Structures are given as C-alpha cells and as structure tokens.
Length: 221
Length: 221
Ligand SMILES: Nc1nc2c(ncn2[C@@H]2O[C@H](COP(=O)(O)OP(=O)(O)OP(=O)(O)O)[C@@H](O)[C@H]2O)c(=O)[nH]1
Ligand SMILES: Nc1nc2c(ncn2[C@@H]2O[C@H](COP(=O)(O)OP(=O)(O)OP(=O)(O)O)[C@@H](O)[C@H]2O)c(=O)[nH]1
Ligand SMILES: [Mg+2]
Ligand SMILES: [Mg+2]
Ligand SMILES: [Zn+2]
Ligand SMILES: [Zn+2]
Image 1 (cartoon, rainbow over the protein chains, first blue to last red):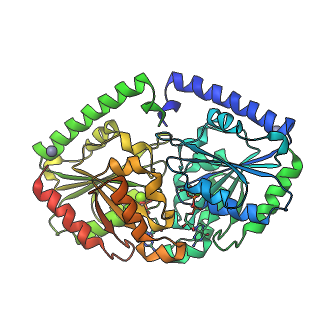
Image 2: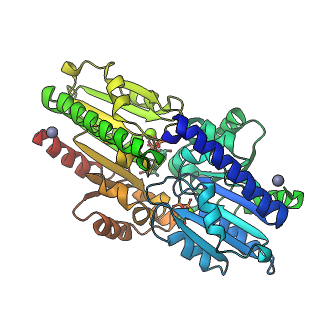
Image 3: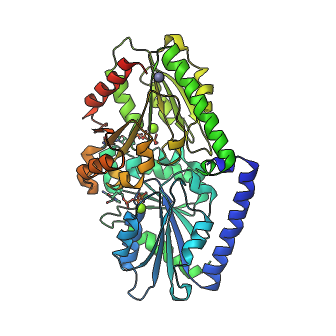
C-alpha cells in the first residue's frame, strides 16, 4: 500500500495504530467483548470459517460481525442468515479495513449486549498487515488452492498475525499443493505461530481452531 | 489503495498513466513487442496460464516475462524452467506493480530481440486497477475457488481490464461455484468484456484465449 511509503503515510499509520489501541481498550477491556479479525486472500474461506464458528457457538452467545468488501453485500447477507448482528462496510477503492471504518461501524452495535465481534477484512494478502483493527487476535486464512507457495510469498502478513489457517485442505491434491510444505514455511517465516488446517466447507478441522479462540477469549485481552 | 484518495495520489496516478503511455509507445509501437499483462487474485492461476501460453508458442517466438511478487522468486523460477527471459520484481510492501517498476525491469531485456512480453502482476483484486503498465491488454484472471461472488465484489477491476478468465473450471463443483452466474456477473459489471473459461492446470480452454491474444497481437496496438 502506497500510504506506507510516504511521510504522510507514516503519520496516518501511527494515528491508525493509536485508534486501534483505543478500540481494543473500549471493546475488549471496557465491554468485555471477544474480538477476532479474519483476514487473508480473496476467497480463501474467511466467511465460511466464521459461519462454522457461529454455528457451533452456544445459543446464548451474542455475536456481531463487521464485514468488509470492496462492493456488494454478499458476505453480509450470508452472516445475516445465521441470525447475528451484521454491519457491512463497503470499501470501494480501498483494499483493506482501517480502525476508522471499524469505529464508524460500531455505531450500529450495542456493545453492552455483545459477547463476540468477528471482523472479516477485505480479501488481500498485502495491505491489511499495516492496519491493525483493535482485535484480540488476527487470524490469517489462506487456502491450498492459492498454491503451496502462498506462505513464502507473503511473510510480512504472516508475521503481522496471531494465528494462521490453511483452509480447503480437501482440495490440496486437486491443485497439487503440499500442506506440510506450507506448514514448514509458516514455521520458517513466523516461528511459533499457531497453525490450523481446515476444510471449512464441511467443517473439518474447525474444532481445534475454535478451542484455540476460546482460550484467547478466556484470557480476556 | 490509499494513494488514489489524496491530492498527491492523483498527481502520482497521472504521472504513472503518462509513464504507462510512454512504455506502450516504446514497447509496442517502436519495438513491435506484443505486451500482455495478467493480473488477478492471489493464486488464481496467472503463472499457470502464462506457462500454458509459453508452451504452445512457436519455437522461434522470443518471449520475456516480468513477474511481480511480494517476496521470493517462486514464479520467476517456474518461468525460467521454460527457457524464457525472466525478470523478477519483488515489491515488498507494495501490493501491485507500477510503470516505474516495469521501466526498471526493462533494462534487463534486449527489446530488439523480443516478440512477446508477459507481465504478471502481484496477486491483488483492488489496487492494480489504478496502475496500467503499458500493455496492449490487461487480462484479469479469477478462479472458481474464490467463490462465484468474486466478480460482483470487484466490479472496478473488471472494468479496468480488457479480457477476463475464470480459471479452475475443473474445481467449480468442489467449491459449489456456478460459473454461469460468474459469466452473467461479468456481462453485468463489464458489458462486452471477452471472457474465457479455463482449467489451466491441464490446459483445458486455453486455446480460445490464445487465439484471442493472437488477434490482439496481429492488431499491433
Ligand atoms: N472445497 C472447499 N471449498 C471451500 C472451503 N472453504 C470455502 N470454500 C468455498 O470457497 C469459496 C470462497 O469462500 P468464502 O468463505 O466466500 O471466502 P472468503 O475468504 O470469505 O472470500 P472473500 O470475502 O470474497 O475474500 C466459496 O465457494 C466456498 O464455498 C473448503 O474448505 N473446501
Ligand atoms: N485444479 C486446478 N488447479 C490449478 C489451475 N490453475 C492453477 N492451479 C493451481 O493453483 C495454484 C496457484 O496457481 P498459480 O498459477 O501459481 O497462481 P498465480 O495466480 O500465479 O498465483 P500468485 O502469483 O501467487 O498470485 C497452483 O497450485 C496451481 O497448480 C486449474 O485450472 N485447476
Ligand atoms: Mg468473505
Ligand atoms: Mg503467479
Ligand atoms: Zn488487551
Ligand atoms: Zn497502441
């Protein structure tokens, strides 16, 4: 993203980082909301994965979703079908969400009546790295169908996240992807990063990720 | 891309457009090189598709490739295995190529000894729209595995391109994607845009795209 290159860009980024810290303080610490961001390549399976998490949540868990897309409300309407509170953020020419957009979207939610907030970023493997959104963790979702070189090609984004998912494990053979190689690359570019393998469409492998998220939720920060 | 929003950004964009026109003039009109850009989502199959085009080229066609990636040289080494001249452009924090990067990369090529130049952009569905690179045409490659909503979600990029490919047709069923719906969306967001359906891994559907490109090559501008 060009903003990262200019002096103006640096100021803007510092301002965004401060705004993200404020969001985190307000959402997580003041209101006790569990906030998780999902980001990753276009079509990697972010929405499908979050749908699976929503489906397995306790019936009394009050869930909200802020979903960013360049255009349209396809993802928002998928989430709405699950009966959760959804705000759609259409970014237009922007290739990522920023904390200002999250701040604006929060006006739609009653934070006292929210247990969980999922934030789905715009599909993009580069620019979101520089724009934390105040979540407790950033979950990077890539998939086998992007090719098993996708980790090596995007080290900075893996380093900017707190957990990673290799989704569409069921399609690894169909594209000739070696998931073990992807895991080795993750260990290489982001040592210690928690990594999950899922087939979100049929729900395979979602449970270990859900347990991991529950642990972060229990930690409360 | 944030650059598009600011006044500075507008200047920069105008400068880049002028530079792209100069590149086009020099490459296409002065040197008679056929220049085609391939862009699209991360892992949509850009490299695989261009590999198929290289394989079917006449033995005496002198081919060059400029390939952009955030990190590493995976794609460059794949192209090199085909015996073509390759320059790898590592963009680091940038999410797209720009005409300045192409200009620099051209120093590696003897333009008098080049018939075809393929340019593969960084995998990204947003930012490349604003940065033409001087090619005769921009070919947008998406794939079924991104979901059949990928066209509706990215109208601006389709409008900025001269042809589109829905790749991984062989995996449409595996992800529940309706290719006809994608084609209808293309007709809707970018009426008249030439659209091709391919399974680049096994080469299915590449021939009609290749014929189309040969037509543009014959046109010479
Ligand atoms: N076979 C298979 N298909 C999957 C899997 N996960 C997602 N899909 C399919 O992949 C396509 C994209 O999934 P989405 O969940 O919309 O992906 P996304 O990351 O939210 O996409 P964007 O928001 O547009 O970037 C859809 O057709 C899904 O049905 C999986 O694990 N296996
Ligand atoms: N089944 C199937 N797999 C494909 C097809 N096209 C590409 N692939 C696979 O998809 C993965 C990504 O393909 P690439 O050609 O590297 O995609 P790309 O668009 O160049 O990727 P980036 O340059 O990283 O953005 C690889 O594992 C390919 O083998 C296809 O038509 N069908
Ligand atoms: Mg989505
Ligand atoms: Mg490639
Ligand atoms: Zn905290
Ligand atoms: Zn011309």
